[in-house]
Image (cartoon, rainbow over all chains, first blue to last red; front, side, top):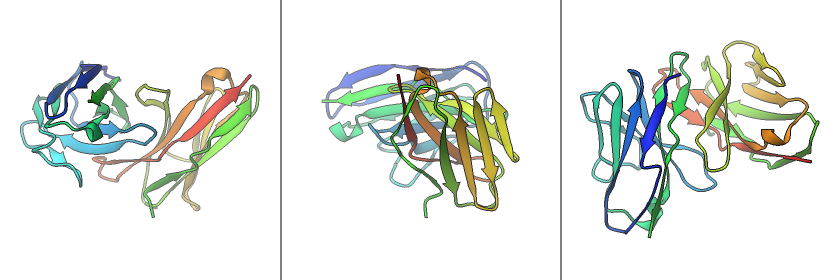
Length: 113
Length: 110
């Protein structure tokens, strides 16, 4: 499997600010996804990052709050805008592997205070 | 009905025990299934893939029952290092969406 690098790995942010998380894959991948996992919960898909076009958002997630970029087949960013304490979570970048499984970056732990 | 359902546990078992988790899925047309392991404060990592009746890798065996629409994960001779949350994942047929179970927590006790 390719290797996914995410940064920052963790951050503590003030409410009302925005944070951009970067995701770099060491090989070209067709599908990239952004997930959120709140403490004690399972993963929730935020959106599918589409190369060269707008991301596809899941119900409950909107572009104004979570703008996503994917300029090429190896890189994507997720911005968490106008943060509130409810946005405290781990954000996971993932990519589709050749066998249709998905693999994840190490996650970005976000705490909003 | 949820797309994927798991018993959340927790399962607390002694070292050396055999433990099994079940995962039920709602889409009878699903073709592939995955078990992931997630350690505390870490990302999920692929443990096993299941495409036909089952798969075996060392102490781990995954079995698929299409008639009853469930997959199971069997861990034999449990080790302390097996303590983790095990996630059942079923892709949508298009492969563009993955349905995650809520995870089953396992603690192996010395």
